[in-house]
Length: 96
View 1: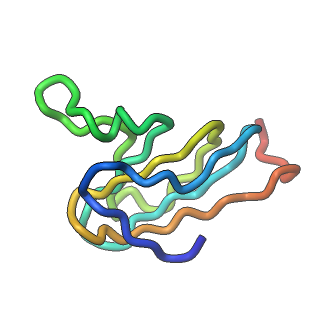
View 2: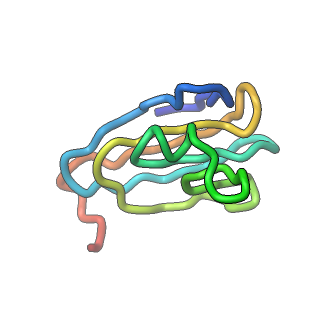
């Protein structure tokens, strides 16, 4: 996908949707946090204690590889949170 910028405002951005399990690699490229989820509500409605929902990634996480199915929403912790998500095409052996 190349380097992109996630915003920290609602609505969360829909960046992809997968009908089958697909391997994605997530990398945060600045000092902010990137949140991803399969549902927009998880990223837009504060969770227990006011915490941000979804999976969180920072630059310290490095490149994180995970299988994904369904919609993929992103939201940043600050305006223009830089990230990169690489998507492997269907049919690539993801080892699962």
